[in-house]
Image (cartoon, rainbow, N blue to C red; front, side, top):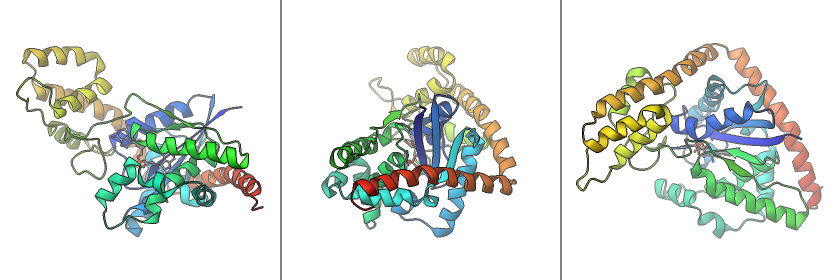
Length: 324
Ligand code: TYM
């Protein structure tokens, strides 16, 4: 029996380096390990939990699929699909909401952060966000979830829901664990906080050109602080260096300690390394953009395969809850 894996990314736009290093790299690693059966979706329904534009969502739920394929997700090895195409996620989420308290949802750090960000849009959908995520994972009875460290509170909720469902209704949901990558927390280019689509100037897109990447990397603040403490910007720079030019980090650290480091040399070496990794993805993306038929086929077949598994779980849950 293969170990099952599920992950997803919201359809908020083009993927950035944080998504790639924190999630997609783990998704690829598990896809390419024959012990695992992998399902990867675009969390398009999660996108409507915060303000969105209809036309952008329509476009982005497809763009993320193209980004996935460009990054190396392979429909021959993984089920690649759009969440909204599989109604069972939403149905299961409603059943799960019957065993989840409002207080538990209100206390989640991710919920509090979004309330601060969108004070006028604290909808029921936003409150339900983690329940839908639990349903995404458990509708496939997946035990492994490649995501960044910021998603850990949601996985904790998923495990609680699995336990409670099993206790109350005798289901056999696993308690899923996070599959972590080396890039589980990618800092913002501004130094403070994490790389995030919602913070302008914090991210590098997978589609950025060499010049754009250079400009962004050069913008990482490297002014040294009095007292000799490493500033957040410099820390971020070294985090990227560890990930991209690890064999040279020692040398740059020594120079930094001696006070002889030319930050621009380190930044430009980093830029080259980042671009070198992204260039083949960008080439592949160009091809995919012009192959509408292929992308449509991937989307359609993915939905069919996902539904086949999801409908079985939902049928079982309905039966166990007295609804079928
Ligand atoms: P989302 O769309 O916010 O982010 C997608 C993935 O990218 C990771 N990530 C990062 N990793 C490291 N450093 C960063 N700076 C960084 N920024 C983003 C996130 O951890 C995530 O893995 N709730 C999910 C989407 C989702 C999902 C699911 C994931 C919905 N249902 C089921 C897994 C399983 C989210 O908001 O991701």
